[in-house]
Amino acid sequence: MKRILFVCTGNTCRSPMAQAHLLNILQNHGNNCPEEIEVLSAGLFTTEGMPASSQAIEALLLDGIDISSHRTQELSQKMLEGADLIITMTMMQCQELRERFPDKKENIHTISQLADNGDEDILDPFGMGLQSYINTSRQLKNLLAVIFNIHFSAKEENQ
Image: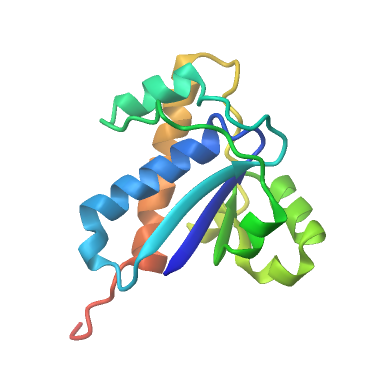
């Protein structure tokens, strides 16, 4: 089983939205995936057990995804060491994790890097209003569709 870990700052917006979108993609297209995948999320600086932001919940409901049961988790060494792929929202987060966990350096990437979208950061929508959350959700959904097709979808052998 492959374990994917999304990381952002507070684990109330971006990483739980990314986690939910990837889980939704896997649920809808999982038969195209050659292995079982577990998807987690955590925050670099958060208080354990807080809910997702209300705007993040509302933005995902537009796609029929409910994250109201999400509770924040602070990134732990055990969580990071158990992950096969660590996906951050920004280059700064990526660099920080690579410095803190040099043994996992090759497993840590930004979401934009994995989608072959350069070094574009996923900006934190916290406190920016519902439309910002909707935009972030759409951005994550689009990037994760690309990532799924590049990295997780089974390739047709006869093409």
